[in-house]
Length: 380
Image (cartoon, rainbow, N blue to C red; front, top):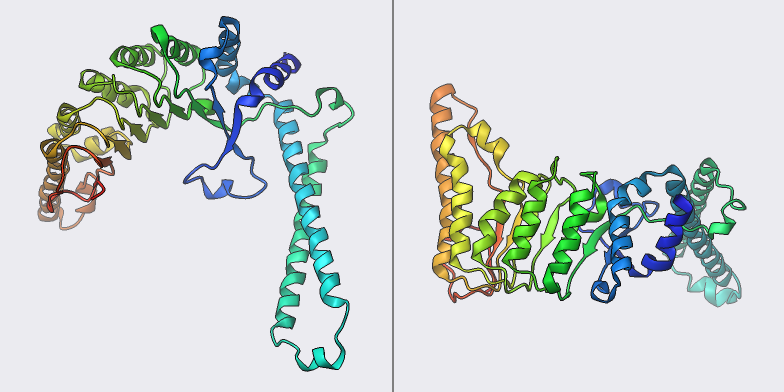
């Protein structure tokens, strides 16, 4: 079915693709020969017919299978390397033109007399750059030959392929009438058999008229999965003002138990209040109850950033979040002292690092307390 899948992608979905720059990407993926990253923008979801939504849903469910097809990977890699090769050949031609201009049309004794001391260094650098470009072109040629793509056999497909590096899914600024957006998304998550499908890595629901019922549906779907949804790393609910404190506890506990790779939660510009700060405080301080450092270190969620900014949170709510960080700091001081008294070393092993940052900028408070933890982020 590969040819029909590629045909459907080219005709109906490719136009929704946009290239993106991924923050904090691994060093190994910064090379120019590494495949670019993409986002799939379903901003036309409200205007799709029932059949279009169904086909799009099936595409997302089977995306990880399509990406794993060797033929798709070979075509994608081949076309990407050809594009880089063309760019580098163009740069080589420009370097040659520059060299010709610099070497031609000498000015005689006057130019010799006013010869720049740095000219030799500039020419040497240009020669080194040209040599490096030639070396990169040779490497590209070698890899292209290793791929062994029969271009004539692929002519009928116009070298089309399905990108394997879609890492953002935008479901933002949608109407969500009768929970249509969340029902569709939950169907995709429920039937996606892979817990490493990259297309769900960053999931955006910004300004899509979600409410507490939407969050309940999402949580119930995640909890019914037979395995964790480990592909999810960031989830965004910004601008959904109908999301209130009533669903936050279920949301945090579901994301904790079913999304073990999650690091970023965005609740910016929703309808939450100080009650969410209390829920967050109780959620984290529960881990300290067992007093077993190794167990706490193992059980803490990997969350790095929770955005609570632009909400109805006053200074009492921020104080509760600060108390959470203070409680972890006191726990660490107590256990570090016990470890030193006990075996004369190993204090570092007794620490429970809370790497979380909480953003409370532009909420209902005016003056920050000097005692607040540096893990609390805000603008003055």
